[in-house]
Image 1 (spheres, chains in turn blue, green):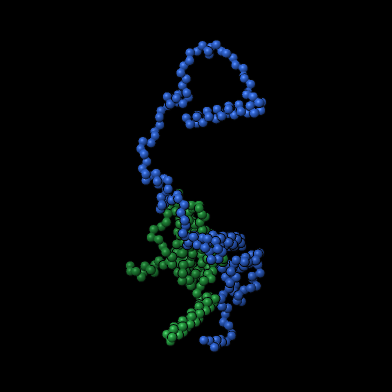
Image 2 (cartoon, rainbow over the protein chains, first blue to last red):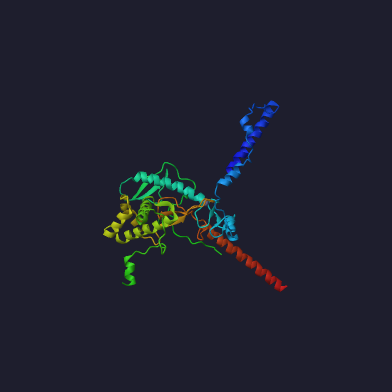
Length: 200
Length: 184
Ligand SMILES: [Zn+2]
């Protein structure tokens, strides 16, 4: 029924618009069309004209409709959601922290999205290179991935002995901490300890 | 059987094991679940760092830890351990990796062999929680940034000492002024 009404409205609008258009272009109303007077039609007795909507109601069966009013709880829950489960209102978030490294905000007890993205991109590249290099042979050695020009800078002589070295063709990104693969103490130093004097 | 013998039978893991397993959505039933877990355990040994659904990652973690700890305890000459490794690892070159690379790496570890992090969520999308599972000692850049606020770092030690000296000076000043007041 709704569709029918909408159609009629559109039809009516079209007619009126057409008249307005004609008026605008031609400067007068559209020319009267020719019509034929048919004797058969004029002789017919006029019956009470049922509108389309009325006919529709007469023929059809009424479908089920709500019988009872919904409870206030149900209406409110539909409107606002449930506070524990799915709350529809906007609430301020209190679990956001600022990353100490990059300054982006991240959710508490989660990884920082910005830092993690950098690490993830690097990791996928490493993984692709390693997979390509190792292939299907049995893996019997630890793998070290080195950037360009890093091979000569090993912290201790023989640091990478017994490890399989895979070299990348680019240099280390600036965010990657340079001390990550180096030991803090390199062997025992030969220097004799000097106690500080004249303290306090 | 007493308690001591039980602890000899099963290796004690250094991660928290939930009393009940986590449900994985699996149309193929229990066998499908095992296949799924086998795939991820295999991938973990292969790639050493994975991003997974949280439940799947948590389940996988237990199986991977158990496998490594059995390998450390019994070595590669133990038949049941080898069978278990053969079942859980589908790409057979990784069995070599388990016994020849991972066992020496984790032999002296006092902590767990894997790490599980919560991956960031994209706000405001409502998504299943993701997580990052990795083997420790992997060749990739570290996931957590190095901390700059440790107490034993040299700049922090120096700042602490400076604070102490400043405070001592202030206390001296205060005591002096109090004494002067009393004298007056
Ligand atoms: Zn960050």
